[in-house]
Image (cartoon, rainbow, N blue to C red; front, side, top):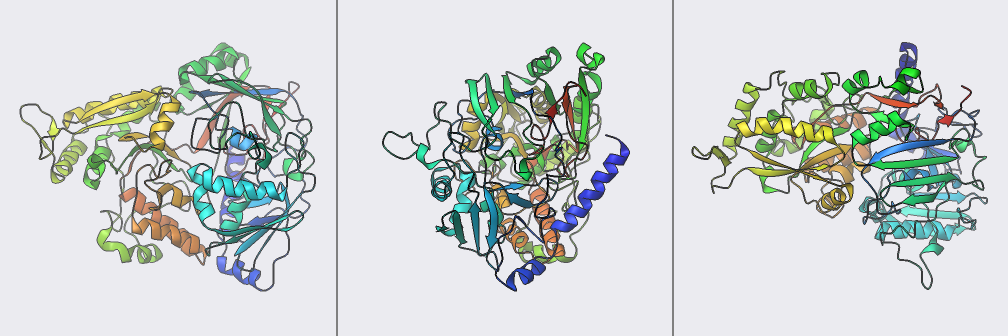
Length: 620
């Protein structure tokens, strides 16, 4: 990626973020002047960037050739083909490749949707309701039409029997009804303008597959009854835990839509599964897979000198982005008594000597995540809280974790493995929390004589995380702490994390340029203890809940940014996660025949990019 392209991407990202953060008051004023008319798209704030009659998404190549195949790799396995329920472990790609929603996202804007299964969208003056008109030509992969009845059934079933991530939205729907031959309306139970957009993103499945005599139950985990979708691809071949192959549907109903122009170019998408990352890398070298995302900056510079790369048969591409860093690290489960005290969590972060571990793992090439929304305008600012951020946090001042108002920053650590100053500070915090080292056993104990012992839950496919824990354990031993590392397969990992049955685990939450209702799923009190909760750390904070609500209710650009920065402060000062690296770019090694458009979306290599807008061309 050359400097000029990076500059263009950065400039577009800045304009897009400012566009997304337009005053909500302006939106309400404009919408309230008269009843809204059916539109081709909708934006969270302001108007969609693409006009009615647009030709293609800006990061899709309308001239991309169709054909060829892409083979991607995954570590782990799968035992289900239903991505919409809690049971089982499906290939995560199925949700975006094999199923469609009423609207689709343009990933070159923070949050705008355009018609997909629905040809138009209409909202009430204050977005208290939303109405979709289905396209008459839309049909499922078995040829049956997509009907209003399918839409209503999908909303109701996902909202009551689906994965917990769908339940929160459904609770905010007061009514869903058919209002015309191809029209469906949802009326909302609360004032939240984002709900109209979230409704457009719910997957639509075929009701007839699960109703009637002898039909399978929707909630069972199975490889026999994959949900029937309407998307360009459908599963045509698989072997449990080994591979799954999707084939482009020659009768796909939407191939002439502007939204699909230049997308879904491969005839075949195959996903191969491997026991670990090392085996997957060997598969790239041997040509078994044709694309690989490299997450280690040091390995990117040092190990891509194998024969295929030297010949130019495998090339390296760097894809920048302008989205927030999100949070990647090791999360501590505060439901466990051992991690309930913020001082203990602070000590665990101090003991994790990031500069030394980063230098060992990546040669120090990857910067650390500094907050949940770092790398963006939405991230907290250093030093004491000021202005509107302070105003939002002050009502909760008596109950805030230390550092929220005063300012919080991660420990600096040192390149030496000893890290004496931080370990000394960690021990002081542990003593304050009631822990002390027994002179005879040299182990850390509480007042009842119980040892400080915990388990870290990791995927067996991540050798890098295991290596980091080995380095970390040496520092913990000096504090008298015993850490057990449990490495398990993906199915067992999902089962335990869904049950919230872990002390510490590897954790990743990607965050967007338009955070909203999903923040309740990640950090909100409601549902924090429910099976399948996305709130792995178990945050139950009135202040966090209030900041999320302030984001949703923000009447202006400044209020929205302030609420997000205040939330960022609360999450960091809560010391729930030991942060790792941030990935400001994606590093993708791929076969030379694989290509992507020059115009990159502001979200970079995220949803909607790989394999969606890539193509195969031997001539190039």
